[in-house]
Image (cartoon, rainbow, N blue to C red; front, side, top):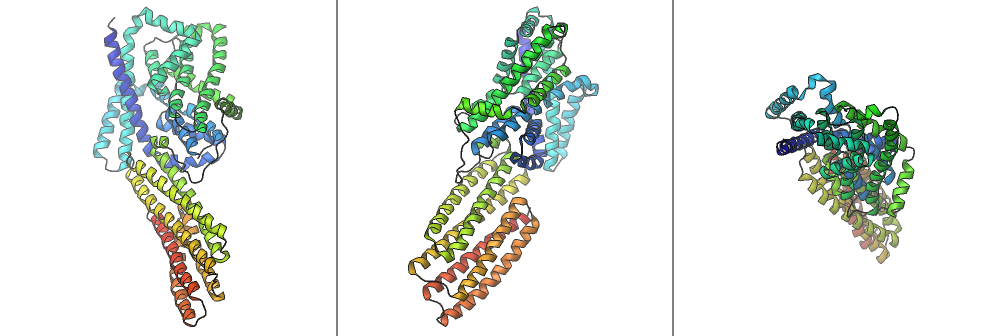
Length: 544
């Protein structure tokens, strides 16, 4: 038998299958980007929502390994705890079954025959790509072309291995794998670990099944091994990460190993009793999809109540406790860049977190002008340093994201984000300036006049409100709050002119000391600039 003539087209078909799966996933990800970004908010909810999120994201990007790598990145960045990671990992195992159903559709939906549908899909996708002008149409063309290439790949693999039906030695290999569960699991794990894609590994198994080569019991054990093999990618990605991130990868491995052990015991009992004839029978592509889905859903249902115990076991094995979050550390991880829409949402959350630190700094600055508390002055300076580090780190990450293949809309959103980051950082700078003015008043033992104190409080209130409204507008994409900022900023401009004129008159009338008078005027400038930068943030939100 000419094994070279079998291997070369099989490898070529596998490459086409993986490539088609990737470009289809990229198109789906771009098309579903906004939905994925909104769903990311459920990470703060319970594990059940995490399961749904993991299933959805994996179905879109067609890779449970990629989803788990993102989870490792989230945990490493500190934006997800291990309990939340557990839910997403369970969902990822369910979402990865989608590719298998696409492949097996050629059996239960005859009109999807690859020989007829794949060329039509590729041609239709190319026409859409050449004629479409909008980005959304390009995404649709990627989905269609990827779908067609995926089917061409699976057809090529199936055709390549069809001569092996005549090979008694090759058929005996699968008989051995079916009779020895351990070998079957090892075979599935090794193949999946090598190609680092359980979806592609299932596709290979389905191509062999289409040629009538795979017994039912062998397929069951191989599928379970594939779920273990897919953990390798996440384990490799956790190298060099924090202990918590390594524990997240370990959770993925434990979950799949425990599920495999439970399912293997059931399968061994099932095939060794009255159902032995089923085990030796040839499995179909659709049955592989059913077994794959049943295994992952059943494992999730059985282990969901014990997910907390799995997390504890992973922590004990890894000798880790939950990490504390350093507020000055940027909670972003380069692993998330594998899925730009998710990375962008994470950036939005991180900018909002920085904004709340700026808000806390502003609250302290409001008080310190009048209390002149030296400890609070030092705290404001520390908070400003924290904001500077965050701004620098987030900006660096945003620039990395901008170099990736993202949509025009996402490029515009990145441009808005960079401007908003700059405005927030400048507001933090002005808060530090205000603390320095308070320090000057303290050192020179001077105070504002009673009227000056009242007017300064009015100005601080209006300007701080501007930023509070701006932060809400950004965090919740609220246009009404953005309009409130513009209204408050207009008040601040008018108030600054009025207060400056009245204060100058007080200084002429010697109703205020020179030192306090200079600080008053400088503080007015800083506060007015805070409202200006708040307005800039609001206008960026209104420009979307």
